[in-house]
Image 1: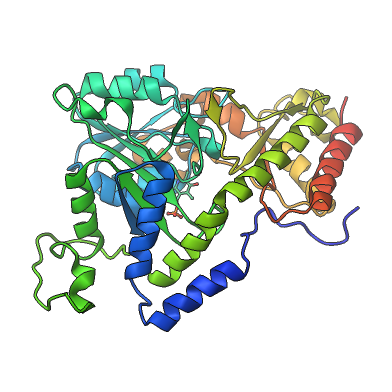
Image 2: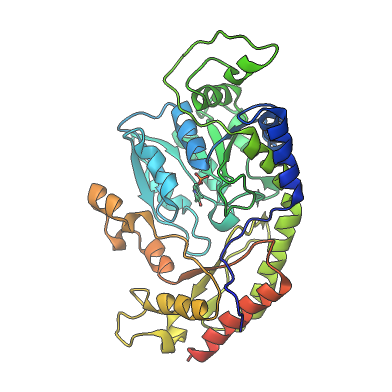
Length: 411
Ligand SMILES: *Cc1c(COP(=O)(O)O)cnc(C)c1O
C-alpha cells in the first residue's frame, strides 16, 4: 500500500511556466497586455475559433456570453442538472430562469429529446456541458437550436481538447453560417481553473466566430469601456475612453496568460498521458462486475479531464448497510470512497446534481425524483485521479486500491 496520499488532482507545472511568468513580470505588463493577446491568438488557433477573449474564469466567460446574446429577466435557459454550480448561476445573474433537464444515462450529457420537451416561448438559449471531456450530442442540440431560434453557449470547462466527430470543441458549429433561419449565436466557454486540463491558476476563454459577439464580450469584460481599453497604456494608445455600458471586471492578467501559453504548448502531451491512464484503468477494471467504465465514443475525442467510474452497488454487498435503501442513498459509494482514502487514494464526486441543492430545491421546488437519471447516476459515481503528473506507480496504486476494494467487498 502507498505510504503517501495521492491527491485527486495536481497541475503539471515546470520551468516553462516560470519562464513565461518571469517574462510577464520583467515586461512590466502584469495585467492584460501583449501576452494575453498572444494567448488569445494561440488558443483561437488551437481550437479553430475566429475570436478568443481571455477572461479570469469560465464563469465570467459564460456571464459575458449570456450578456452578449441579450438575455433578460424572465427568460429561460436550458441547463443540464448534472453539472457544476457555475453553469446555472450565470443564468440567475440576469434574474432569468435556469430550466434544468435530465441527462443521457451513458454519457451524463444533455439528453436532446428532453431539451426539446423543455422549450417554451420564453426559452432563449441552451447551455450544453461536455461532462468529463466527452462532448454532448452537438448535432442534435444545434438542430434544436436552429429550429427554435435559440442561442448555444457551451460550457466547455472540461472540453479542451475535445473533438465532436472530428471538429474541436471551440470551433464553429456547422450551422452558424445560416443566420437567416436561426439567430446563430454560438459561444464556447473554457476554464483554466487549477484542476482543469490546462490551467492559469484562475482563468477562462470565450470563443466565437461572431465578431459582434466577441466585441461585445471584450467591452463588457473591461468595464464596458469602448474597444481596446487595455491599449490606453501603450505608445499608440490614447487616454481617452468612453463607457458604453456598465460592464464587469473580468480581464485576464499577463501573468496568467504567460502560464497559459506554457500550458498550451504542453496540452497535447498532457492529453496523451491522460488518455494512456484512462486506457490502463479501463483494461484493469473491465473484469469487475462492481465497476462500470466511463462512456467513450469512437467517433469523438474524449479530453479525459475526469475519469468517472460508476459503481454497481448490487455487486458490492460488503459496502451496503443492509437496508433495502442501502444502494439508493449512496451508502455504497460513500463507503467505497472511505476505503480508497484508507488506501491513500484521493477521489472526488462529479457532480451533485443542481436540483438536489437547497437553493434550487427551495427556489423552484425541485425534488430528487424530478430528474431520475441524474439522481441515480450521481449516487454511484466516483471520479479517480487522472492527470499527467501521475507516475506509472501512482496509476498502478490507484488500480491496486480500486481492485482490492472491489474484490474485498464484492459479492
Ligand atoms: C470548473 C467548472 C466551471 C467553472 O470554471 P471556472 O473557471 O472556475 O469559473 C464551469 N462548469 C463546469 C462544468 C466546471 O467543471
